[in-house]
Length: 500
Image (tube, rainbow, N blue to C red; front, top):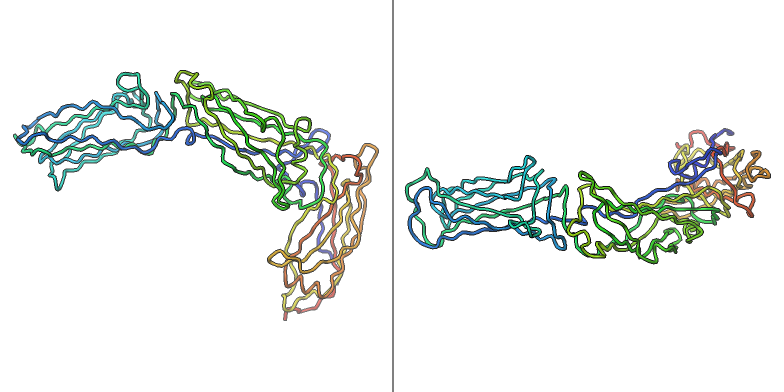
């Protein structure tokens, strides 16, 4: 049996993801890869932990309380533990306050709770009236209510407007004026109120955010520029990268990168970036408070072959970028006089944009792909017995292509090799280093009965294409118009009803 198997064409987009390619007016191709290296977000700078405050009142005497009896008002403050932060204002995007009362007095008690420094969207202070049923030492009367604090603004300067992390709190109790004329009490009877703030997410905060170090923990980001290339040498003519750090938080920051390195996990090799940004701190200006959103400051530095070893990093064919470091917040102290700020949307993030013009020299650069051929019949009774594969190529690329066909098992171990005779010749180069004419090539790959048995049994074929640029002395530019047309035919012994 003789017949066609494959008719196809491929361009550079089949070697590299199309989303990474950019083309200029002359058709020159450039790889552009963008990734976020690290980000410092709201939950890293400001965490408002769930906090509970207990306010007990214990009866000092035994006797009777008349209806309407008013207990002494408690004017207190709620002090939030915010670690290194000293906040003056906090606007609540979402969060809750639960008020719970345990009443051991055998009569209804009405409690009034106010937060003079917590204003809702209409400017009205938070106030809640609670009715706790009567109870006893063994079985207190219980009251519990949760209030939504979304949209509230907390003035955290306290009652004297001279403090931080402090919210004025007022509590008062009254024996139900419409209850019994007298309510008997025993010394030790108690009224206990617990105020619990939880799930507080700020929409805005202002104060002093402290002089502190925040770790950029060791991490990695995937780099899929060369994910299908497994070995060989790639010599890039030019490569640049822009590191852009955007600070949307109202604090001055020093960024210290301990390292920024490329890793090739296939060869287990790393190349560390050598550049001034890894030698000393990067100073970032604080964002400007725009009144409803931050106006970020932006730091940009160019990394290229003139000031770094970026080309060496990328020529190692890495599949990830690794980094670690730390951030020094307010390295000069409270120079804003307590006016550091952040919004819910505030973020400090570092982005890397790599530009690789596809002007290169390739030496034995291997592109590897694995496929599962759709073979007629079964492993026990396969239809194809042996044969000869023919590959006809019309190559318009400026590189030759040799091919290796390996039969691999489920563990990716090579169990057989199909020999390929010949190579795909390079397109013809003109004096300007561009392909002036495509070239036809014919390759053959004999498949013996033993190899056919292995192919049916293992079921997978690993195809390695070995690229070499036509001119190894100069970098060749790849154009978006370059293409290779392929036709694969088979000349095989075919056993009819081979699966029976």
